[in-house]
Image: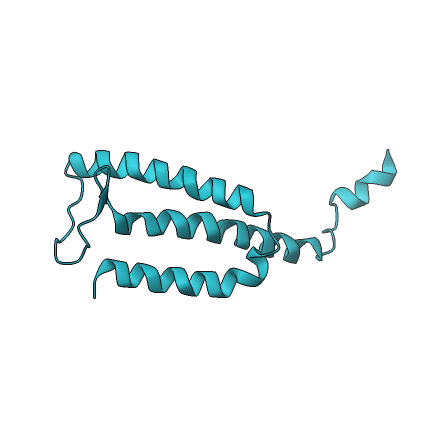
Length: 112
């Protein structure tokens, strides 16, 4: 199995699972984050590959490069840019329903 097959499979599952939450988010910040992370990936992966910090097996990648970074590297940036806002939204929603702990801010407000 090549890296691109694995990356596409992970991205499809991520999008399928996160779609109900993702469609309620504003699109522009998510797209802007994807663009920024992909630019950073292109720059820094190129530098790390040039410094021989890691090497790809030629039979596992497509051979398509952006700057010096293989196309497969960008799946991680896309997954992070899509997955993190979804997790932030879901975990934030879950916490908002939890009552304040004893001694928390809700107990102190009337004392002042």
